[in-house]
Image 1 (cartoon, rainbow, N blue to C red):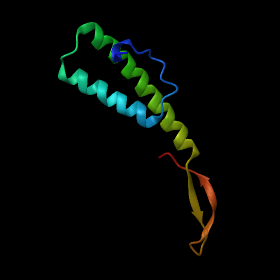
Image 2: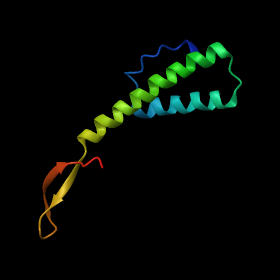
Image 3: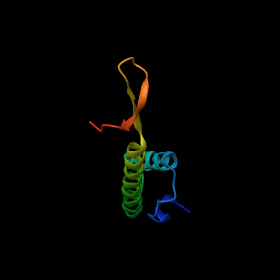
Amino acid sequence: MTEAAKPTDVTGLSFERAVEELESIVARLERGDVALEESIAIYARGEALKKHCEKLLSAAEARVEKIRLDRDGKPAGTEPLDPQ
């Protein structure tokens, strides 16, 4: 199946696989050697991959916690990661 023929459902892809495929799509589009119809199709898949990666990153970020230290500099628990 060519990239153009792939459906835009990317929910089963790992982050790494989605990024790899997205990079491949970007490279193909930047080369400019893709027919218009195929460009539109792979661009749509690229958008779906980008959104999927953002969703996976947000989920991972929500799970990350930073270690809270006590006055002696020893670990005293965890707290949610401050996204800023």
